[in-house]
Length: 192
Ligand code: GLN
Image (cartoon, rainbow, N blue to C red):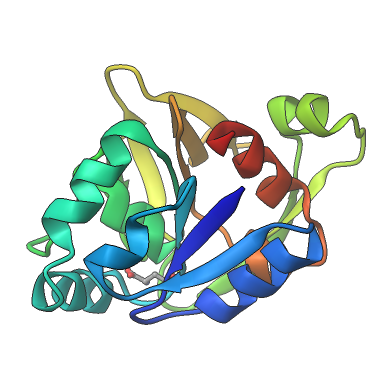
């Protein structure tokens, strides 16, 4: 099992550490050839416009879209925006997941917050019962899911913060900034 982390901008090194912690071979992806022998890819949090522009500049757009047709990809925060089909914004998107996202949806004043989420599927997959403590930083909201995409987790008021479409995963929050490895384990199960 070998997982790549898109390392153009954002908190890719935290994802690499998390993967190493659960014993997975993890490599940085900066060029199309780095995708060659991977089982899955993580797109980190950061700034989705920057990640998009750099992906265009590094000729990664087409290879990433192609990779996502047959492999697992997980986008956290900015990565989730980049994976989406619609971000209500003019910026390069992979358009792989049939979700509509709203950037910076939690406003400027409350830029960051943390909350416990009950994510049935995650608990079932990892055989655990405690909630998942999620960290949101200038987070996007998943406004709606379409086609084959489905809701994986929502806040108590119903706002969607995680979605899945086959092997594609999108989270508004940052599992790489916690000590809880369950989301990374869940992603590995999708990649294998
Ligand atoms: N606000 C960023 C964006 O719109 C995402 C923030 C993050 O990844 N923590 O791209």
